[in-house]
Image 1 (cartoon, rainbow, N blue to C red):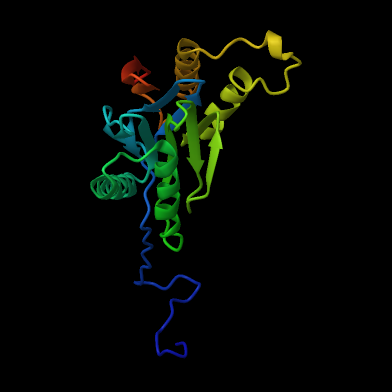
Image 2: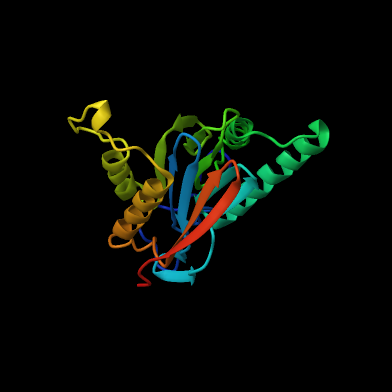
Amino acid sequence: MNSFGIEQFPDYKVPGVQHVDFSPYESNGGSIVAIAGDDFVVIAADTRLSSGYSIHSREQSKLFEMSPKTVLGSTGCWCDTLSLTGLVKVRMQMYEHTHMKTMTTDAVAQMLSIVMYNRRFFPYYVSNILAGLDKDGKGAVYSYDPIGHCERATYRAGGSAGALLQPVLDNQIGYKNQNLSLDQLPPLTKERAVAVASDTFISAAERDIYTGDSVLINIITADGIEKRELQLRKD
């Protein structure tokens, strides 16, 4: 018994006594890839929602359209994902009603960082990647850690297969450790970005049981958001 008068469980097993652990978090899997170009950005996420060896849904989108030029990809604990994305949408609506204009991608990125940092002592168990066009019309990708640290990048992968997806992007988009001059680098077109994103998911689905079924791809340009779908393995 401690100083507060509460009896503690001993470290050894006691017959008839069962100590039950509780965790407020649950990983429901899912992966995200985002690639930014000069006047476009591609963000893709798989549609498998699972827990352990059980698949809850094969058709669950993890891409949330925040505005005509901004899309948030969020995976991890699905209840935290719904809670966070719902709060962000409410904040965006409040901003729009107050200022009579839609939040830019840069502003959404900053707001999302603040919202996550406000929960730093009990963080949202999610992996977020925000993609959209900035105020100059250029593609922008923002990645986050669990407590809201934000970093802008040209390409980024996250989620359960993030460690498998990121090296492919480093090689095919970042050309890491390749002795190529600037004039030898192929241009990053919209179709090439879609093809690389598709190939990364096809590769990851072979190794990660939490990634699969299909991939939803959003292509964000000044004309709006184009949506495509790629089928993956179902097992």
